Image (cartoon, rainbow, N blue to C red; front, side, top):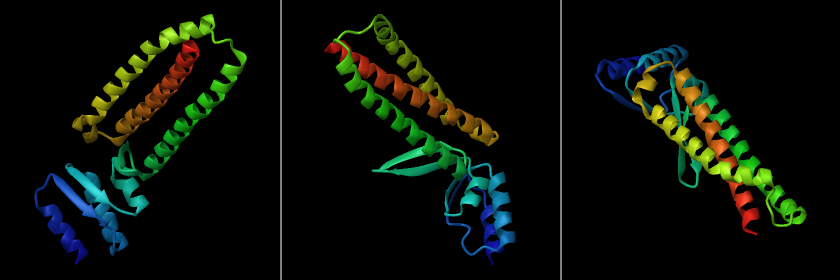
Length: 186
């Protein structure tokens, strides 16, 4: 019966499929058939599933609820989402720790003056942040291009990984800029 329903589903032309827990109550053969059909499907697929292996085998992007009403898009399957989410959390934790350590130490050891190197760094940071913002915008545009998702998923995964790295670098540069501005303003 499940195979018949799948056959009927894929016999009708459609460019969007919305599937909610499609792996429930499927035997292994039908699950393999569904994976194969969805992998070859050329349209857009919205898929909700708790089957992590199924998600890894079929999807090229994950849209995940991050909490507080925030939804974030990740390139790749479930395992890629887990890895990128952990990297993002680790990157977000690093600038906060560094900024927290630098401020008290800087206030205690400096006489409210920036060194020559810090002044140069402060002058260069706006240009660096602008360049990172431009690269981030370029990467967003590439990831928004539907043609990217007609190719093997590795390209999208690489672009998303680079986007995450650029975002982390930009967060670090912004945090450093705030620290230097605070020191210069004292």
